[in-house]
Structure formats: structure tokens, C-alpha cells
Amino acid sequence: MPIIKSSEKDLRRTERRTRRNRAAKGKLRSGIKRVRSALAGGNVETAAAALAEATPVIDRAVSKGILHKNVAARHKSRLARRLNQARSSAAK
Image 1 (tube, helix red, strand yellow):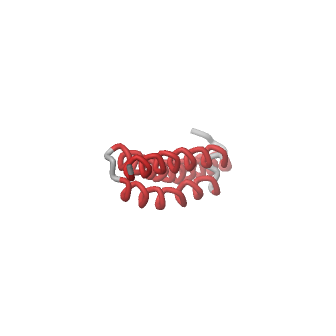
Image 2: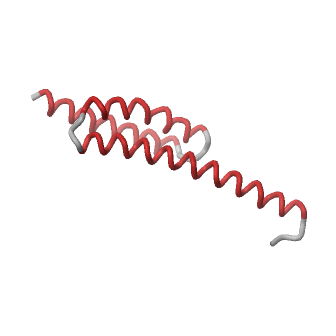
Image 3: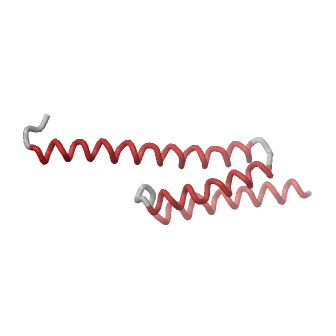
């Protein structure tokens, strides 16, 4: 444990930030997982709704510095591509 007051404060600050980042990462992973599981189950409408909910969560993670913008763009692109493929295969 640190003895210096500023170091103690740094520890408290780090713990606070860690909790906040873990919560945001959890929401991010859950949103992505909902889309993937709906696509795996073949439920296109649920997947579309889940993607609509996951997109702002991904964008929020970028604005908070949890994800890099290119990583977020890649996630959104891959999910949208899989959704479009599912829609086209369901239409046939």
C-alpha cells in the first residue's frame, strides 16, 4: 500500500475507472453476443433489433476510450454483414 496521499488517491481513481470500464465492456460484449446468438438461431428480426441496440453501445465505447474507432467499425461492419447474409438467405 502506498504511503503518499497522492498515490492513495491514484489507487482510488484507478479502482473507480476500472469498475466503469468493466461495466462498459460487459455491456459491449453482451450486445454483440445478443446479435450473434440471434443470428445463430436464425431469428433475423431479433438480430436486427439487437444490432440496432448494440450499435450505440459500440459507439459509446469508442467515445469513452474503451474501443478504438477502427475496432468498433469492424464489429459493426461484420455484424451488419452477417445480418444481411441472413436476410438474403431467409428471403430465398
